[in-house]
Image (cartoon, rainbow over all chains, first blue to last red):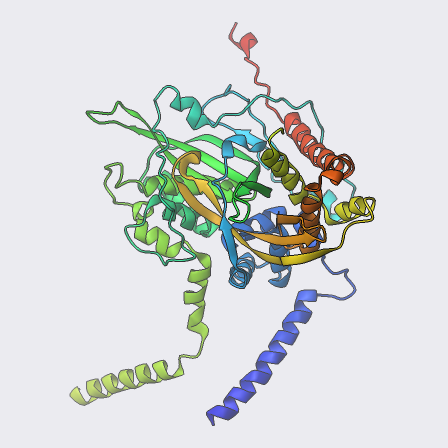
Length: 356
Length: 149
């Protein structure tokens, strides 16, 4: 009996996937969507899939988006699955965001910070009115240009750091933990927390960050600096014995400057939260910086009372691939489990009736 | 650029960013090219990208990127390596071949002028175009003094 059911299931599954492929293609009279089009014209989706799929490859992310019919979590899942088929050659030198080729850089705390403020290709200040001209394929003029300034753009944390009024970065030559190699364990150090946040679900991290602003573990944040642009990536292959530059990545970084902290030995100074994500992902980078700061509560001697300060809670629930797996597994057959529950309930009801 | 290692680092970084078709076309103009054997790859793999907490602190693993590597040996015995972003195997192979050819003192100058420099110019031009667009969005704050007086 069971065997027949399996065969029936197979046929149904094949038919379902056949229909899916046709649904994905849509009306054949409409031209098919090219992967290059997705890569070029749906850049923010591509960036999000690369960040949450934890794999920087714009073409593959675009392909995943096409395959998943624009379901971005499904697309990130496809990237995560793909990465398991490849060997890892090396790790990079830590990228230097101070030398980023800036395309956007803003600060909410200093109007005139060295290097100035560049808005970049932002949705800020748009009116959020639907642009009906996009219904027609009107040609778009190339953006305006101006003479580029060669002024360096120090990170705002370095600007404040010169005065000693903000906590400095603490260097460590320790090998960072890697969630793709070892599963999560607690207490989780900051390197692991940052990795988890960088690949965490944007919606989840956004909600947790938002909760800190609404009073659940508030730390009075200021967007010290947000910068987006290209950084070079360097590795040191053993066969060469020197570092080589292998390409460029677009990254978004957020330096959150938070309420101060001092002690008998240390003068009061601002504390910090940090966000860094693949692609142009400002919302995610900002939310990540808020949650990073919240998760530093214990280290900074604050009471751990709010969800965003609870490292276990945040890290166990930030990954949308894991969350999808566990939530969606509920739709798989639980026939036997349910039969036993059914028998339990019936037995309890029978007992109740005989007692009456 | 006097140091041979830094010279090689420079051309390898240019080759890592080269477009496959352009590199192929530029190399064709250098014919005849020596025969070569591929010693390793070209094979696609991953590199774990690291960042630093706070920008300058302890390293953390940000996420992976795709990289393709290749090693070739020319019939004259020169060994060239390439690690290039993405999964384009032909690009990695051509970059490794060019790296090997650049190590041949009889070819270095011609390749530098006709392959590396043109590629580098193209890459610099792209950077300048992006920088010019960014510069156009620079905010010029003006103190609104007239409103106070």
